[in-house]
Image 1 (tube, rainbow, N blue to C red):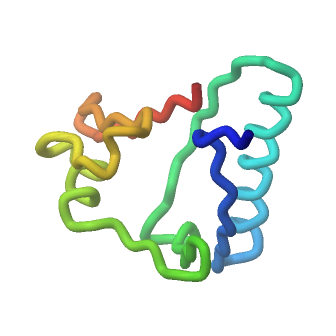
Image 2 (cartoon, rainbow, N blue to C red):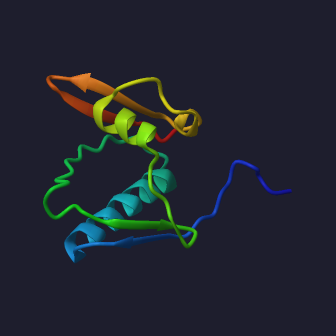
Length: 105
């Protein structure tokens, strides 16, 4: 019997080589944490008006955020959109910035 919580998806990233390679390393880091059963924290900065501009396709389709998702994730404004409720993703104001907190548990 298959576990209904397991999802296999295909993700395509397009962007500067260094940025794409770094995102792949982040995913590999998550993978190795799971393999060793260890908990780690990751600090990340995204330079959205610089090199960190990427294109993203999920299962062959572009997967843009809705305006409500963008507003919540970038500014921490409003209630968490229904599309994010099943994810451990919280936008939190901190020191004049909005910090995206993600827990992979």
